[in-house]
Amino acid sequence: MSQENEYTPPKVWKWEKESGGTFASTNRPVAGPTHDKELPVGEHPFQLYSLATPNGVKAGVMFEELLAQGHKEAEYDAWLIDIGEGDQFGSGFVEVNPNSKIPALMDHTTTPPTRVFESGSILLYLAEKFDAFLPRDHATRTETLNWLFWQMGSAPYLGGGFGHFYNYAPVKIEYAIDRYTMEVKRQLDVLDRRLAETRYLAGDDYTIADIANWSWYGQLVLGEAYDAAEFLQVQEYENVQRWAKEIADRPAVKRGRMVNRTSGEPETQLHERHDASDFEHKTQDKRG
Image (cartoon, rainbow, N blue to C red; front, side, top):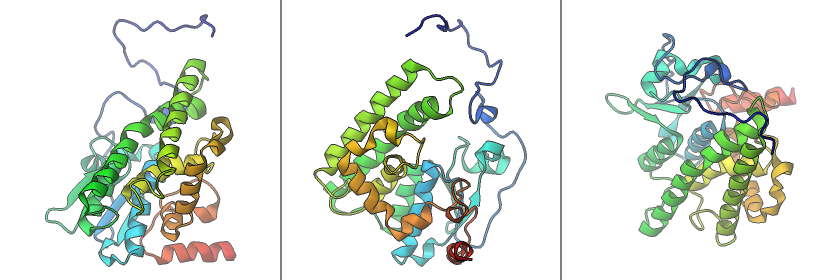
């Protein structure tokens, strides 16, 4: 590894220029809103403000799974938050999530309405509210939460680590790519060993642990993230592949991953979701 351009950190770091790379224009070392902008509110009990990144996909899939299970009270409006345009720094969004990250949720079934932010918190909140996708049995419930929080702790190494340096960074840094590739492959091995023992992560039943992990690792091994399937040799993880394909075939997952999606083929995108018929219109558009 060349040492010619080795970086020596200053004694005191100062924000004097953009970091470069994708999303550089929206990165900054301070919190809070940059502009005044109220969030729209639709007619349904739940208002989701999101984008179909892996974390955003979790929320869309969860809502669609709840509705598929017959929970009519889980009807929701999904509003697009374009992070490339800085929508997450609007005053209304910051009120819902002071961390300015998607997804964020408002539950209008409570008085006053309840804000919920962080994707894992949203999954857990909805699972408890509707008594769904979270087992009641003590041991299985604990195992579900084990894998939910494993994902919350592990995925930043996949996204902010590997994904950034392999796919988004303006300069390819050998040390960084090697370091995070090693960690992502270790994580895939963790999942593969677990899924050699069980159908789903917590056991025989599909839970919020699977929704959380599939949105990151499932999409990764299916070639839907970072264009890195060949680089990571994801075919080595046969049990993760089996699990990822099974979940991808669920109708609610197919719908949920479309919600607030702005990339890919037009028929896979549903920028806003306000009614179940919105998916039917997309299907009709494709056929037409």
